[in-house]
Length: 400
Image 1: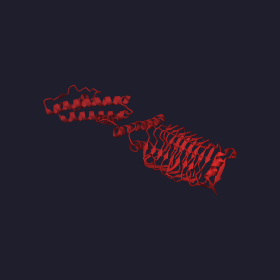
Image 2 (image 1 turned 90 degrees about the vertical axis):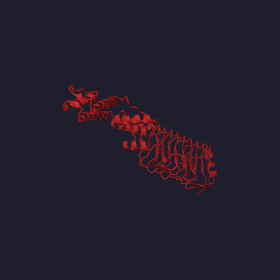
Image 3 (image 1 turned 45 degrees about the vertical axis):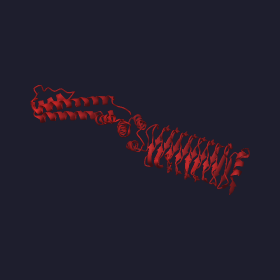
């Protein structure tokens, strides 16, 4: 069956005479261009398994339902389109360089780009409002999927074989600034490009289900927030992603992950995340040379305040060195036990042992060495004791 685009337009313009069920075609070939720009039909339009020679023009049109399942056409232009219920493009095959141009749509139900949907060109839904869900499971997007500043009432499903590649100089999937009241689900999705996912400043009202196996490329996460623990990826996988698969160091994604585990009561994981964050800061953050050196010292000695017990290990090492210096020097005159007490006295800021009978032969080179060494060791012992106290009380914690 063949029908011209002008005939369909006339039917939709004369919407008063349309059946309440709207206008329905199945398996038709649409010749010429179907231009429904600015048509206010307020009835359903169903064109299932139809083929169009030219792009469908639907900008600023209004329907109660728009069903284009199985459509074969170069493109769909739908800027400012308003649909009271669902917009269906399941199984559609679009071949133009800009396959879907649908900025600022208003959809009262859900949008379906799933079940075999295939776009050779870019698909853009940026700035749109969708009351229900955006379904892309089983869809193939060869030149990127732009969902910038979207508002979604329920959730976004980039799962079940959703395959997004390309994107040019942009990410394969761009969700920057999008607000989702429900979930983002990426299980069994595949996303590949230099930057696979741009999730900057995305706000997820519920769960984030994002396994990393399907992500082939870098990820941008600055400003992204979500509720609860992120699912489908382990803490180790998150640490690897944040430290090696983001474009630059950013404190916020680390803080968000730590907060999620803090809320869940996973204190051990929180410490791991915070320490890994500090390592990433030292490696990629904007620190001066001296700032980087001090950062390294804090990391080695107290784990940036999250592992203060390390300072006690260093303190024990200082005491052991002090004892070794005194015992091997031969310049300290007293019994072995008293020499050990003398070594602890001069090095430790915390413990005093009676070693009054010990004398040091300061006339000998070894005696002078013992004095100089114990002074240095005492400084180090005090430093490590102070770092332990500071780390334990949180004074050196900095969420950079």
